[in-house]
Length: 391
Image (cartoon, rainbow, N blue to C red; front, side, top):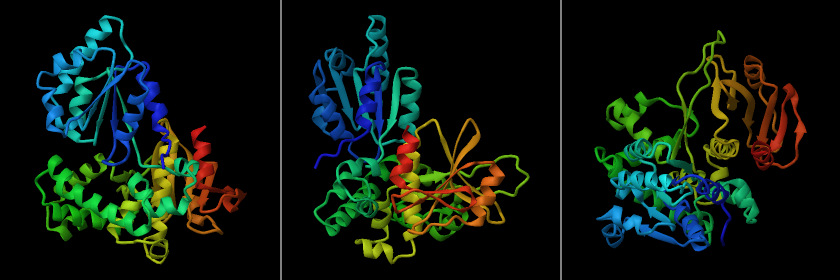
């Protein structure tokens, strides 16, 4: 099954007027598939290089000559972190093309986000490249392909996991994916901590899904220094495997929680880390509610786009909002998430909304009907709220 990705339109539009597009996302999320779709019907032809293949890397030994010889074609460089030195060459070619009046896209660069690489690319290609973060398949994309929401929630949005023949094969794929990251990718980007320790860290984050981060406790449990934990959570965030949701802060005269919440971003990876194979396994596990919360939050943030900034809100006395979306430093929308067909917002949610003077109040639940609730809130399905945010 081929699932149409919303990112295809975004990348096509950016390539119409920006010299280079950098498409970032975890391995196996669909970046290469999307790039090949673009290459297949690119009007002037395309060249695809996989820089994990020695033969393709050899072509870039004289990168300047090779890339200039592809003038007019779409040049796709996959696994760009394997050849970070090419950014300097790209800058020169792009600048020469601009002087010749060519400003549309010629380069599509694919890679897993890596702190040093992206810092280097953003400095070298400043004003010459656009960045697109490609997330796993979301609820809207799955629905368009006829995939039930519970299947997406259980298996997550990585295509090979989502489209596996059965739940057992899906879980096996996710276990292999996790092992590959621990043994290959994480050491490549940050080799100072053993893969086993990173695996324990990732599992601890899964066991504490949606909890306020306590780095000191995690560091003590793993027997490593607090700054080390900070660096490795930074790496997992940068690789788009973990989300660090920051608390909303403002001068309200309230005692607010100041530490971020942490979520394993893809629900399927969360369930893989906790060895949850079937929907029954998930529904009977203590992580069920927080898994659904993280699943909804990731989908909603994706739908909200870059113009809205996500936070959570919690006071020391228990007033709380799962997700606050705002613009320009002003909170606009409060979202509570309930894994119940009879959702009811807590009093603490109403107090928190009053604190922030938010009138748009939604409670996301597993159903599809919208109806009013107490405290000025409205029950709404995840897909419906995503569509509202995308308008």
